[in-house]
Image (cartoon, rainbow, N blue to C red; front, side, top):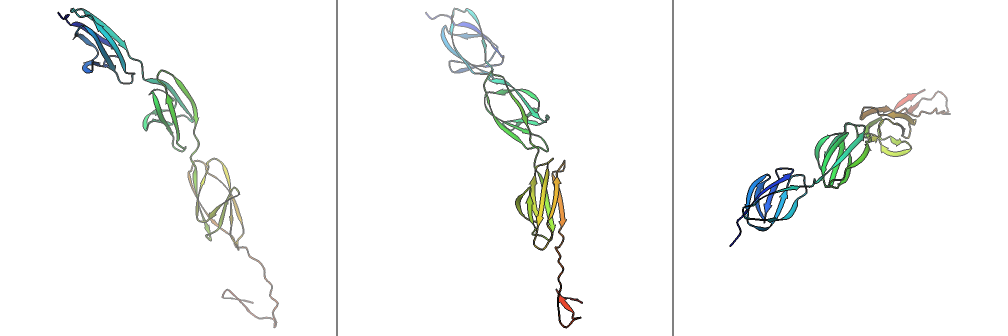
Length: 238
């Protein structure tokens, strides 16, 4: 004769875990007085943000009531994220989760961290999260976003030298680090060199329009007979 089925009540922490017995889904915990044949059964529990659990249970049968509780291990870790300056938007795998400083729970695995703050360069970093292992990634220092100097000269095609390094000819857009003094030197044949000190503060785009002064020279003509008129560039000179 076969034994009568047993009655099994299944609970879990956290509650609401999906229960699969012998490959068949039975519902979610808590399951009260579930009838199972006497003998060995494989049970699996799944809960969001927790490690799957698999166990073999022995059902006594004979209408005996058994109560079984299962604790699922968390699949996350506590992570502390901070930045300097603070208030940066925090994205994990492209999803905004808050602003720095933030103490959050992240699912285990490789996570892509991004910090965004207006006026600063985006910081990206890959985090390795191990379930149950808390980590403090420290304070990530944000670098100010490069500004842009839009340089024009009259006449055009002047050579542009930034901090001693040749950049090209005007007109020219030049990326500049903000809150720092930069030396711009303009050179063009037939014109005086011009040097200016530039600093971008809160303005990320600055326009600079510069007029170069012609390099003039005195020329003396010895002409016979005297009192002759001289034509230069279409203009008469005594």
